[in-house]
Length: 273
Image (cartoon, rainbow, N blue to C red; front, side, top):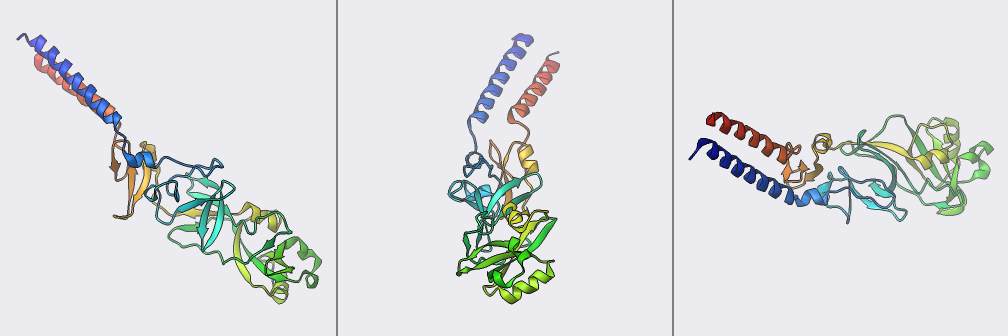
């Protein structure tokens, strides 16, 4: 057989094989890659790794302890110390989120507020962001026995006694704190707010910032993958179109096959020459 004809037939066969391999690779999509597509609770806030929404996304799409629920208002909810916090913003680049306690952030000061638990975060999952202020919430306060200037710190009536009030004070307001400790009989809990110049109610409405601790997703996401976590092996996973990888997706499968095809073609031509 003529050498040039042989080379031509080999090239045709090789490119046909390449085409079939490419079609096969693009026809199959890994189910975990499909399962971990970002979702929302209805307000448009995209939820993806390290978070996942219970009942909507699979746990393997997020990091352990980062499961969320959806509130009636369409906002995602994060549970901290058995208290539900509304998520207003998520910055995946900065690995932070802004949340507020809906019990305190109700702008209607006629609403009665039930006691909540002290806010604490574990060092392994979340940490308070910078420029956060400590705020103490006092329950069962008799405003008649408190200075008039403390009226602006009233958050609402006390659910345990509607004739009493709930008052929020910054930790550095030492004189107000002393008066509140003497006159508020319903207990006190700690809270966090951003360091803003607005009043206490406005600060509680805005909420505070948390930074999260979880394996970074940048490398996987940049390679076209979706991040997740394997709880059986307790390790990070990168879900790619072809299959699951440990850190990132490989170079585009078509590109790799095309490169091999070009190299092989050049080798055939060289041998034929």
